Image 1 (cartoon, rainbow, N blue to C red):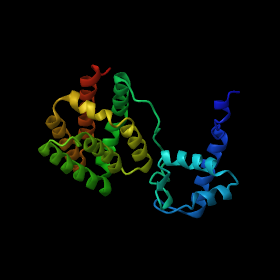
Image 2: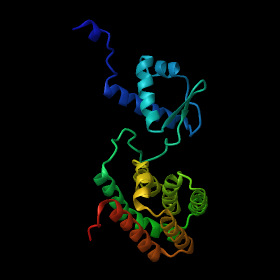
Image 3: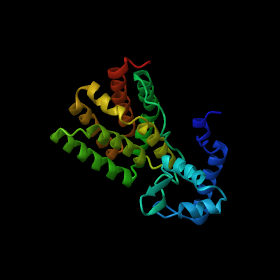
Image 4: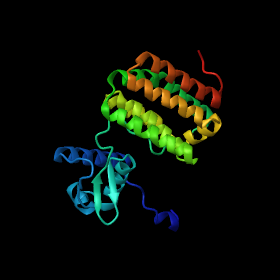
Amino acid sequence: MSGAESHVTPPPRPDLTSSLAGAVVEMISERGLEAGMKIGPLRDLAARFAVAVPTMREALRRLEGLGILTFKHGSGIYVGPNFNRSVLLNSIAPRPDRARLVELIRARLLIEPPIAAQAATVRHPRGLAALERTLAEARECLARGDDRLWRVNIDLHRAIGVTAGNRIVEEIFDAILLIHAEEQQQILVLHGDPRSDHAEHEQIVRLIAAGSADEVQEVVRRHLRDVAEVIGGPHEP
Protein backbone atom coordinates (compact mmCIF):
# COMPACT_ATOMS: atom_id res chain seq x y z
CA MET A 1 0.00 0.00 0.00
CA SER A 2 1.39 3.44 -0.92
CA GLY A 3 1.85 6.28 1.56
CA ALA A 4 -0.92 8.26 -0.14
CA GLU A 5 -3.34 5.35 0.12
CA SER A 6 -2.56 4.78 3.79
CA HIS A 7 -3.95 8.23 4.64
CA VAL A 8 -7.28 7.65 2.93
CA THR A 9 -10.10 7.18 5.42
CA PRO A 10 -12.62 4.67 4.14
CA PRO A 11 -16.23 5.90 4.12
CA PRO A 12 -18.64 4.50 6.67
CA ARG A 13 -20.10 1.14 5.73
CA PRO A 14 -23.29 1.71 3.70
CA ASP A 15 -25.27 -0.73 5.85
CA LEU A 16 -24.26 1.07 9.04
CA THR A 17 -25.04 4.50 7.60
CA SER A 18 -28.44 3.31 6.39
CA SER A 19 -29.21 1.68 9.72
CA LEU A 20 -28.27 4.85 11.56
CA ALA A 21 -30.41 6.98 9.27
CA GLY A 22 -33.35 4.66 9.92
CA ALA A 23 -32.74 4.75 13.66
CA VAL A 24 -32.74 8.56 13.65
CA VAL A 25 -36.06 8.63 11.79
CA GLU A 26 -37.50 6.18 14.32
CA MET A 27 -36.18 8.33 17.21
CA ILE A 28 -37.84 11.45 15.75
CA SER A 29 -41.13 9.58 15.39
CA GLU A 30 -40.97 8.17 18.93
CA ARG A 31 -40.34 11.63 20.35
CA GLY A 32 -43.28 13.07 18.43
CA LEU A 33 -41.09 15.73 16.85
CA GLU A 34 -42.40 17.74 13.91
CA ALA A 35 -40.87 19.86 11.15
CA GLY A 36 -38.84 22.73 12.59
CA MET A 37 -38.13 21.04 15.94
CA LYS A 38 -34.55 20.49 17.09
CA ILE A 39 -33.34 16.89 17.41
CA GLY A 40 -30.16 17.40 19.44
CA PRO A 41 -26.41 18.06 18.99
CA LEU A 42 -24.34 15.85 16.70
CA ARG A 43 -22.07 14.58 19.49
CA ASP A 44 -25.02 13.69 21.69
CA LEU A 45 -26.58 11.71 18.86
CA ALA A 46 -23.29 9.90 18.20
CA ALA A 47 -23.10 8.95 21.87
CA ARG A 48 -26.73 7.83 21.92
CA PHE A 49 -26.16 5.45 19.00
CA ALA A 50 -22.63 4.48 20.11
CA VAL A 51 -20.90 5.47 16.87
CA ALA A 52 -18.10 7.83 15.90
CA VAL A 53 -19.02 11.44 15.17
CA PRO A 54 -18.03 11.21 11.43
CA THR A 55 -20.24 8.13 11.02
CA MET A 56 -23.14 9.90 12.69
CA ARG A 57 -22.60 12.96 10.53
CA GLU A 58 -22.67 10.85 7.36
CA ALA A 59 -26.05 9.35 8.34
CA LEU A 60 -27.48 12.77 9.18
CA ARG A 61 -26.22 14.27 5.92
CA ARG A 62 -27.99 11.49 4.03
CA LEU A 63 -31.23 12.47 5.76
CA GLU A 64 -30.51 16.12 5.03
CA GLY A 65 -30.23 15.30 1.34
CA LEU A 66 -33.76 13.89 1.48
CA GLY A 67 -35.13 16.92 3.30
CA ILE A 68 -35.84 14.83 6.41
CA LEU A 69 -33.37 16.91 8.43
CA THR A 70 -32.18 20.50 8.16
CA PHE A 71 -28.79 21.74 9.36
CA LYS A 72 -28.72 25.35 10.58
CA HIS A 73 -25.23 26.74 10.97
CA GLY A 74 -24.54 27.79 14.55
CA SER A 75 -27.94 26.57 15.70
CA GLY A 76 -28.21 22.81 15.32
CA ILE A 77 -30.03 20.01 13.53
CA TYR A 78 -33.77 20.21 12.97
CA VAL A 79 -36.56 18.04 11.62
CA GLY A 80 -36.94 18.91 7.94
CA PRO A 81 -40.05 19.56 5.86
CA ASN A 82 -40.02 16.09 4.27
CA PHE A 83 -40.08 14.05 7.46
CA ASN A 84 -43.68 12.86 7.07
CA ARG A 85 -43.59 12.44 3.30
CA SER A 86 -44.25 8.99 1.87
CA VAL A 87 -42.59 9.79 -1.48
CA LEU A 88 -39.17 11.44 -1.73
CA LEU A 89 -37.09 12.74 -4.61
CA ASN A 90 -33.79 11.21 -5.60
CA SER A 91 -31.56 14.21 -4.98
CA ILE A 92 -28.58 12.70 -6.85
CA ALA A 93 -30.32 11.49 -10.01
CA PRO A 94 -28.44 12.35 -13.25
CA ARG A 95 -29.68 15.08 -15.56
CA PRO A 96 -31.90 13.64 -18.30
CA ASP A 97 -31.45 13.90 -22.05
CA ARG A 98 -34.31 15.01 -24.27
CA ALA A 99 -35.69 11.48 -24.61
CA ARG A 100 -35.84 11.11 -20.83
CA LEU A 101 -37.56 14.47 -20.51
CA VAL A 102 -40.20 13.39 -23.01
CA GLU A 103 -40.74 10.23 -20.96
CA LEU A 104 -41.35 12.35 -17.89
CA ILE A 105 -43.94 14.46 -19.68
CA ARG A 106 -45.63 11.35 -21.06
CA ALA A 107 -45.73 9.96 -17.53
CA ARG A 108 -47.53 13.14 -16.55
CA LEU A 109 -49.97 12.50 -19.42
CA LEU A 110 -50.92 9.22 -17.80
CA ILE A 111 -51.26 10.70 -14.33
CA GLU A 112 -52.12 14.39 -14.41
CA PRO A 113 -55.45 14.47 -16.35
CA PRO A 114 -57.29 12.21 -13.86
CA ILE A 115 -55.71 14.12 -10.98
CA ALA A 116 -57.06 17.34 -12.49
CA ALA A 117 -60.50 15.71 -12.72
CA GLN A 118 -60.25 14.70 -9.08
CA ALA A 119 -59.19 18.24 -8.19
CA ALA A 120 -62.31 19.60 -9.92
CA THR A 121 -64.42 17.11 -7.96
CA VAL A 122 -62.86 17.67 -4.52
CA ARG A 123 -61.75 21.31 -4.82
CA HIS A 124 -59.74 21.32 -1.61
CA PRO A 125 -59.62 24.91 -0.30
CA ARG A 126 -55.85 24.86 0.26
CA GLY A 127 -55.31 23.80 -3.33
CA LEU A 128 -57.75 26.33 -4.77
CA ALA A 129 -55.96 29.10 -2.89
CA ALA A 130 -52.59 27.86 -4.20
CA LEU A 131 -53.94 27.75 -7.77
CA GLU A 132 -55.15 31.34 -7.61
CA ARG A 133 -51.94 32.51 -5.94
CA THR A 134 -49.61 30.89 -8.47
CA LEU A 135 -51.78 32.00 -11.38
CA ALA A 136 -51.54 35.61 -10.18
CA GLU A 137 -47.79 35.24 -9.76
CA ALA A 138 -47.50 33.86 -13.31
CA ARG A 139 -49.39 36.90 -14.62
CA GLU A 140 -46.89 39.17 -12.89
CA CYS A 141 -43.96 37.19 -14.32
CA LEU A 142 -45.39 37.56 -17.82
CA ALA A 143 -45.93 41.28 -17.38
CA ARG A 144 -42.37 41.84 -16.15
CA GLY A 145 -40.67 39.28 -18.37
CA ASP A 146 -39.52 37.52 -15.20
CA ASP A 147 -37.36 34.43 -15.79
CA ARG A 148 -39.01 32.73 -12.79
CA LEU A 149 -42.10 31.98 -14.87
CA TRP A 150 -41.01 28.37 -15.52
CA ARG A 151 -40.80 27.66 -11.80
CA VAL A 152 -44.13 29.34 -11.08
CA ASN A 153 -45.71 27.17 -13.79
CA ILE A 154 -44.42 24.06 -12.02
CA ASP A 155 -45.91 25.31 -8.75
CA LEU A 156 -49.25 25.81 -10.48
CA HIS A 157 -49.30 22.20 -11.65
CA ARG A 158 -48.26 21.08 -8.16
CA ALA A 159 -51.25 23.00 -6.79
CA ILE A 160 -53.53 20.80 -8.91
CA GLY A 161 -52.29 17.84 -6.86
CA VAL A 162 -53.05 19.68 -3.64
CA THR A 163 -56.57 20.49 -4.86
CA ALA A 164 -57.24 16.77 -5.38
CA GLY A 165 -57.30 16.45 -1.59
CA ASN A 166 -55.24 13.28 -1.19
CA ARG A 167 -51.86 13.61 0.54
CA ILE A 168 -50.30 10.57 -1.14
CA VAL A 169 -51.44 11.72 -4.58
CA GLU A 170 -50.03 15.15 -3.76
CA GLU A 171 -46.65 13.69 -2.82
CA ILE A 172 -46.42 11.41 -5.86
CA PHE A 173 -47.37 14.25 -8.17
CA ASP A 174 -44.86 16.53 -6.45
CA ALA A 175 -42.12 13.97 -7.01
CA ILE A 176 -42.90 13.68 -10.72
CA LEU A 177 -43.02 17.44 -11.23
CA LEU A 178 -39.89 18.24 -9.26
CA ILE A 179 -37.67 15.62 -10.91
CA HIS A 180 -35.19 17.71 -12.91
CA ALA A 181 -37.44 20.74 -12.46
CA GLU A 182 -34.87 23.03 -14.06
CA GLU A 183 -35.45 21.33 -17.41
CA GLN A 184 -38.91 22.90 -17.43
CA GLN A 185 -37.16 26.18 -18.17
CA GLN A 186 -35.93 24.70 -21.45
CA ILE A 187 -39.42 23.40 -22.20
CA LEU A 188 -40.75 26.94 -21.90
CA VAL A 189 -38.10 28.13 -24.36
CA LEU A 190 -38.90 25.30 -26.80
CA HIS A 191 -42.61 25.91 -26.48
CA GLY A 192 -41.95 29.47 -27.64
CA ASP A 193 -45.28 30.97 -26.57
CA PRO A 194 -45.49 31.59 -22.81
CA ARG A 195 -48.66 33.67 -23.17
CA SER A 196 -50.50 30.85 -24.91
CA ASP A 197 -49.23 28.45 -22.24
CA HIS A 198 -50.48 30.81 -19.54
CA ALA A 199 -53.90 31.11 -21.22
CA GLU A 200 -54.24 27.33 -21.00
CA HIS A 201 -53.29 27.47 -17.32
CA GLU A 202 -55.98 30.12 -16.77
CA GLN A 203 -58.52 27.81 -18.41
CA ILE A 204 -57.44 24.82 -16.31
CA VAL A 205 -57.75 26.76 -13.05
CA ARG A 206 -61.15 28.15 -14.09
CA LEU A 207 -62.47 24.66 -14.90
CA ILE A 208 -61.20 23.18 -11.63
CA ALA A 209 -62.79 26.00 -9.64
CA ALA A 210 -66.07 25.43 -11.52
CA GLY A 211 -66.02 21.70 -10.79
CA SER A 212 -65.87 20.73 -14.50
CA ALA A 213 -64.10 17.41 -14.03
CA ASP A 214 -64.54 15.89 -17.50
CA GLU A 215 -63.69 19.08 -19.35
CA VAL A 216 -60.58 19.89 -17.31
CA GLN A 217 -59.30 16.34 -17.76
CA GLU A 218 -59.42 16.75 -21.54
CA VAL A 219 -57.87 20.24 -21.45
CA VAL A 220 -54.95 19.03 -19.32
CA ARG A 221 -54.46 16.04 -21.62
CA ARG A 222 -54.34 18.30 -24.67
CA HIS A 223 -52.03 20.74 -22.89
CA LEU A 224 -49.48 18.04 -22.07
CA ARG A 225 -49.72 16.44 -25.50
CA ASP A 226 -48.84 19.81 -27.05
CA VAL A 227 -45.78 20.10 -24.81
CA ALA A 228 -44.65 16.56 -25.60
CA GLU A 229 -44.99 17.17 -29.33
CA VAL A 230 -43.01 20.42 -29.16
CA ILE A 231 -40.03 18.88 -27.40
CA GLY A 232 -40.01 15.34 -28.75
CA GLY A 233 -42.44 14.59 -31.55
CA PRO A 234 -46.04 13.34 -31.62
CA HIS A 235 -47.39 11.39 -28.70
CA GLU A 236 -48.25 7.78 -29.36
CA PRO A 237 -52.01 7.14 -29.61
